[in-house]
Amino acid sequence: MCFGLGFVCENHPDRAWSAELGCQCGAGDPCACNRSPDIDAGIEEPDASQIIEDAGVKKRRH
Image (cartoon, rainbow, N blue to C red; front, side):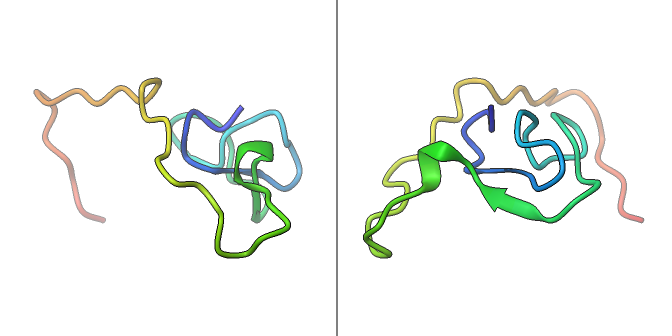
């Protein structure tokens, strides 16, 4: 499950490749929704409906 990001953790393909939503202990692998034999096909419009952003929280730069 990539939550519409298009990539999953290489070591844990059931987790999104995201520090907040899943896991980043491995490299990012294309999710099943992002695989196509046609390299130009890819994801037309990622499903971002599962991504939650808290607009009230200030982002910090490290």
